[in-house]
Image 1 (spheres, rainbow, N blue to C red):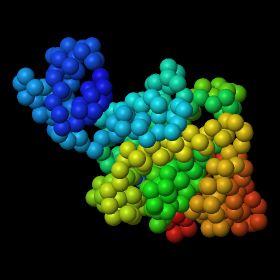
Image 2 (image 1 turned 120 degrees about the horizontal axis):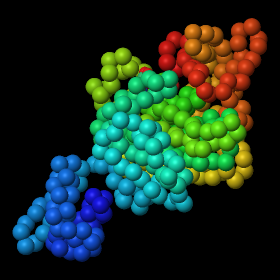
Image 3 (image 1 turned 180 degrees about the vertical axis):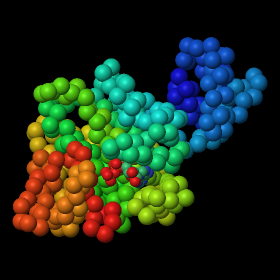
Image 4 (image 1 turned 90 degrees about the vertical axis):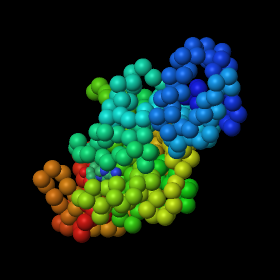
Length: 327
Ligand code: ADP
């Protein structure tokens, strides 16, 4: 309802529209409209209310409003249904609750996450209105062992979208986007399935868009960056989300239609932060040094250990680090 009211006010931006007109259009009481308008004001909208004239929108805060995102989409289903929250524990958790009852491509976005998470239950910093904290729901007809492929598709899509706004970046296999060796985006894939079939896959994407240095806790400051820090200007989050969703559907559809993630892997290889580098392969307490050689057609990282043996690593629970630091 709130979104619908905003849309009407926006269509009449700068002009008054009466409470009666809005209530006729939306078929709800004027009291209810008034309550929603009060909430919108609390969220930072500047709305003038004048008796007998009605409401007039003067200024909108920079919010990830579904109607604004929708206008920039060229997708069939990705992002065509968006759940937008001001504050939430974690968009992945919310997406999991919704997953069974919504269509593929449904998106959950939040202005802030209070319990944002990375892999292995690590914390993900997600301050208010500064990033893209979103989760997408997929229902591919694939086996659970193929779910890491969706992570590679997501990484390729985000990398291309960020490149599309003029910021070069690299993909740190399997799930991070980095700039100058610092993490600017993390991807968290969670799956619900049975032995040979996926119920749903949730892809959580956290992009540090307009965070400043001070928004990062001391312990991650050296390993994290934001698009604003890199570009030295604020970035429009709505445009970037739409780009991510457009790229994502394109590459996901390509996989569904061809059964292959070759096009996504090509992007992950071309933009790889790891290939030809020495890395640490961390599997729990087991740490081995290797050279990252390639990413194969299934999205696995091919590494060669110092004893000459090689391994194809599935993303799962493994972490890769640079020899001297994060990358
Ligand atoms: P990795 O894949 O590198 O092992 P995760 O995907 O588990 O890491 O991400 C969680 C980690 O990322 C945290 O432990 C923290 O060090 C770091 N981190 C948390 N929030 C952010 C953020 N907003 N930007 C960059 N790095 C972050």
